[in-house]
Amino acid sequence: MQKFILNCAVTGAVHTPTMAPYLPIKPEDIAAQAIAAAEAGASTVHIHARDPKTGMPTGSIDIMGDIVSTIHAKCDVIICITTGGGMNMTVDERVAAVPVFKPELASCNLGSMNFALFPILEKIKEWKYDWEPQYLEMSKDFIFRNTFADLERILDVFTESGTKPEFEAYDIGHLHNAHHFFSKGQIENPFYVQFVTGILGGIASTIPHLVHMKQTGESLFGKNFMFSTIGAGRHEFPLATTSLLLGGSARVGLEDNLWLSAGQMAKSNAQLVEKMVRIARELDYEPASPDETRKILKLKGRAQVNM
Ligand code: KMH
Ligand code: ZN
Image 1: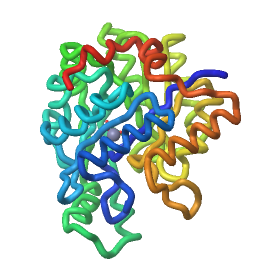
Image 2 (image 1 turned 120 degrees about the vertical axis):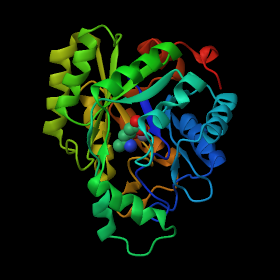
Image 3 (image 1 turned 135 degrees about the vertical axis):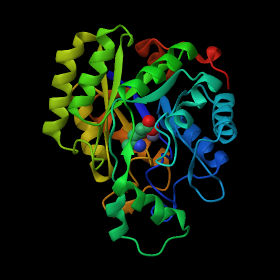
């Protein structure tokens, strides 16, 4: 059985409560769903925080602390804290949790881009919270900021915190941005990157694009290059399955996709993880355990975090 890293993105900052009735919002629910996703086979969980009253993405250190300390106390899953945060946060707010909790992994977004969610407004007219349509409308004139200066600062914070970056590449140019830092020795092997496909403003979720991203990565980083793939929405399982067949890993979860199958919403992150494990095992792939993943990614281990 060929091993791969199965990552679960539990709540994110893309979906809002009205779109996603099963999206975990409260810290205790985000933590519980992360633990259940780990029990279903995920070896890493990607964590965002939300305001428990409104579901709005938040950079609150206290709320993030509630979430990650609960997961860390109950489970050996690898916690990957987001530095992507939400569209309502500055770069400093986005990265603030890393020096506090010193996670083994944290996301690091490889370039600025338009991050467009506003087309969803055409599909939903009634909203539970006023902030939701405002947040989505804002994305029409929003630049997800990750300048080279931002990346330099973020990478320095990761180094000081002993945190390994899980890079997020939304397009081919983002891989070349990473190579700029790799050639300066600011990125250690193995270079681990999520191909984030299907966000309007970034590369689309197609197999030819995925193959091109893999080939670009291999040409830039050689054998020390490890990729995983995110397909947004209905593309999640086709792109994740293709990623395995291309020698990569996979990310599933309600942050990126609300659908278990056509017309059927997933009721939990664990359901999405269980489906990915079933598909993988049918093709003789097995999700790596958290400790196997730590060895593959050369992570510092649970004892070195502050949670
Ligand atoms: N929400 C995904 C499209 C991050 O949190 O740093 C990308 C992501 C970025 O997960
Ligand atoms: Zn995220």
